[in-house]
Image (tube, rainbow, N blue to C red; front, top):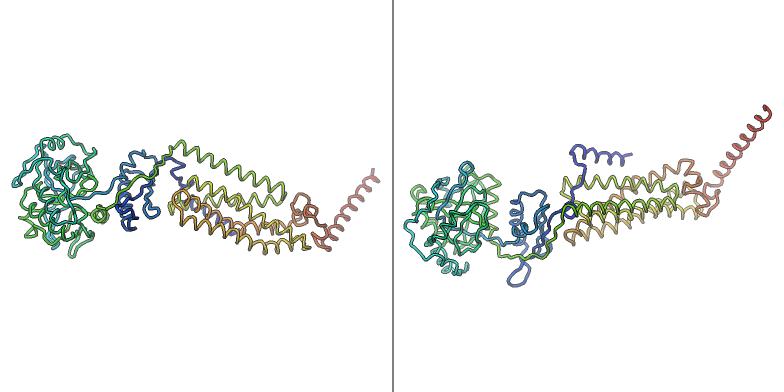
Length: 565
């Protein structure tokens, strides 16, 4: 009764949360799964921290698609598995297959795309905490201003230059080339024609026309002046005696010199050319500005430490800090596999899996009825309870832990039908063995269970151990199979101990099963023993006497009716 109350409680929770169906995997509802393999120059597996950092970046990219229930997981020592429901495979591959490139570029000009949605931009300060002016001035004019005080350089030269972020002299040339860059007529026309959302160039030595991630500001940017690989540390938090969240940056020694050179040039410029843009994957994530007149000596920044402040929330500050910290990864990825399943095909696969499960249940129930006769009722009722409990567990685990039922999971549930039936066979055959050894039926029900439960535990324990090992070592679909197999095996043990055995004991107290009546599955002839051996001599004599008395009473009644007639 307690076990049935627990089952009812599970469905009560489902009703309270309005959750009546399990979450389906991509292979059942449709979607795309991409496996990316990290490649390194030395051929060795990348560091686990680098792989996890790449996973975080890819997760942010997938989240930007606006799809729900997406998944980005590491697999093995160099793989990342990306899954998203109902997303075009080419679009998803373009989104997640690019290597994350972070860079600091000089802002040449900007234009507000939607004034109603434009918001304040973070601003850069020195580590001392003296804030630079907050917010970006609007630039409603579409004319591109000429930079004052910047030496001119031939347009397009940046694309042929090569730099080494391990060399101080090379990075010094990079930042000077970015400072001296001037847009060509072609660059200006690109800026005029560009619409937010269009693809942008990813070459760090070329100028960039792009928008911020919110799509509210459009920028014409110089080639990369400071690569993101020079950032060694980035944290977020509220500074001492502060009330707003800020993002703290720290550069290495080469980055410190480059950042000092860059901020020295920026401090002498007017808006918007006193800004540098932090660009990740072709989108501006922040565009702080510096101003020597109001920064009270904090500009230029020579300490290699800076602070970005603005209208940050805890979440946005953490996100920007992570971008600055993890954006420039020395990892490239190649697509190892791309699997796409349409919603129609997923529905057909689910329907086929359910049909297979129903067929399996019918076959097992039919066999048990033919062989065990009346005891088949126990098998069928136990399978029904197991199915009800498994379904409720899958639904609630999906809501609480994100468990998704895949086609492999359906296969695991179908395999569990055989595991559950195997437990019944062990118990029932042990009862028959006990009876053949001379024990009475009621005694055999108890001793048979005591000897069978160890075998059942061992059998289910092996299946459970296999499922756990398979879950730990496998990936993706196989992991879903292992989890479902382990879940159903654990439920099978609960069913045997708290439902099947108590029901068999209760049925043994009834006349139909307890006296081995025909078609009960416990009749003496069916098990190859005598009725006296099955019930015990005293019980057999009592039953024979009862039958004789009943026959005599029936005969006397017939005689009396004849005399009356």
